Image (cartoon, rainbow, N blue to C red):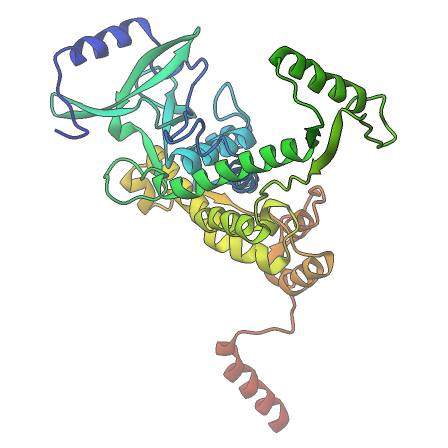
Length: 403
């Protein structure tokens, strides 16, 4: 039956959990991550480069500022900004959400209710794809997900229409985003590449010699003792002069020049580029050395779509169709994401302030300055006038000339 499963004990699960568990408020310690690859010991969040890529995106997303438009749920704005749940600050919530979404391609937003099962939403908890299923009971779809409480995994459930679902690589499933299997080959290359570097370093620190004995030593024990004698005499920490000596027992000694196979720089760059392409970023973004132009491109192509999706999903959780008609919505705006130079910021403020686009406080925010009292007014230069007013002015001027 696919994702929608009917099985006998589901009624019992729902009944028992509603009796003994605060279904929406009693959030303890959530386990929301597990590796998604089985071809090697690790997952998309376990490799340094892919984790760095996810971190870079999540770090920027975490700077977004939630704003509620309209009067309904306006008091919830401060909750989203400060503490969306008892475990996370607003910044941590956004970072966690983005990390789960990019690592697992599905992140559920579980509402926390004021009176457990219904009523006003007082918080939101992000929960990952691991252990989550969609099940049906009496024609109603439920999200059954796993949490970890006191070191033990336990199931929780909630009606699916109460849950906010955010997805990445959204294609074949109506409920979940795709897996990261498209990155498997690149992850394997990264794994082999890292192992090759480690082995290369190990091999480069090994000195190898071929020693040719002048006489035959038939006894294996005597042979080993002689080998150890030469090794201990020459290859030890006290021999820091670089001189290797042997006696007449040996007719020849030759050092092996071991050149371990290292990862080709162009190949390493290609593998890294595959990761950057997959996550829609570049090396400069991961290393925090991007230009204004690069930031604009990454924001437009990678960051903003995530914030739009989150804004729409959270809005759907909070508001009814009538609320939407009245203009209520949640916006995760990006005023904190400023990577322009001071000269560019100055130009923006000067150009937009006297045209009524920015207030004093909004201009100060661009320069990371605190708000001031009375700084929320809009101003416009008086010499500007509407096009529709031009004929009236011309008429008055002509009348003045006649008089």
